[in-house]
Amino acid sequence: MANYDDRKSYNNQPLKEGETMIPIFISEWEMVRTYNMDKNNMETWRVGGQKITVAFTPARIEQKDALMSLFWNEVREYIKEQVHYNNDLSYEELTEWNEDDDNPKRFEPGASPSLEETTLLRIAIDQLIEEVRAEDPVYGIVLDLIREGYERKDIVKKLNLSQSQAYKKVAEAHAKAKELFYR
View 1 (tube, rainbow, N blue to C red):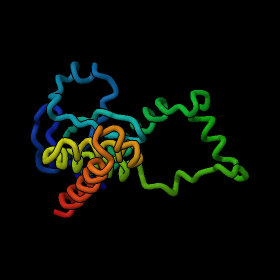
View 2: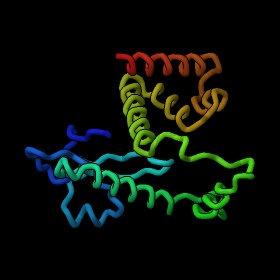
View 3: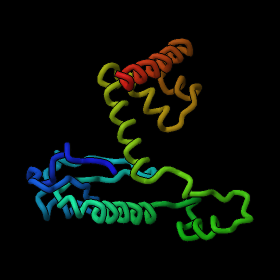
View 4: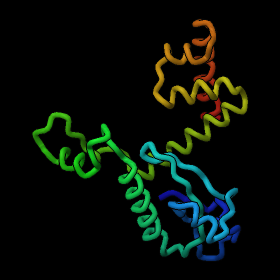
């Protein structure tokens, strides 16, 4: 299970003996005002294609599993409310549709990585892209476009460079990301 002890709590309270840091899903900005949360200690995570705001709070180590389960349940519920397929297929309809064993388009959500693993991977990718962007902003743009699913030909058009210059930037962005990743 992920460790968030290197994060600062929403109210800047340090960890005490026997405590660990856990994430809190910020579902409404009213929470930030009510609890006077330090916005500098919050993070934006991409989960299931949705951006969520997360703060952190100390909790007893023995409560971590239960609190993490609660956190991910809240996030899943939020995503379920946000997901729309073709604007007329609800999450419930999609779930029912997927339960049909004879449906050739059926998918196995249980076969995919956990929501937590996927989230942590996306956070790592976002951080890597930001490191690359700090060295060359154009490389950051290239990697953003790749992450968003653009193909090379579309990236070439977006960069407003000649085809050879754009392809060179794409290759250089890949190389820089690989270099920083293995650093």
